[in-house]
Image (cartoon, rainbow, N blue to C red; front, side, top):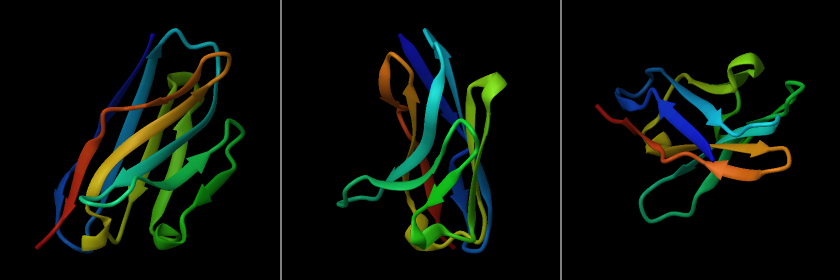
Length: 116
């Protein structure tokens, strides 16, 4: 069993910042890639950012320059620093981890709302 606990979502004004965290625990041999997805109402879940175990990152164009993904391998934790937030960033954010010899897992999600 693998558990993913997300935190850090909330309500923020446009231009504000939030930091999401996701800690993985349980039967974990080694975590390969980690990432964040989001899903806005009525839309499909989309990839926001990913980070490899070695630290290579990838972002969707809409968040480049505003969001930063990072990870702490010792803590099995991935972070998403979100700056200059826009109303269109409003969504439920899900962390995702790819665990070696086990598979891919999603967290339950954390709501991010950007509104004045």
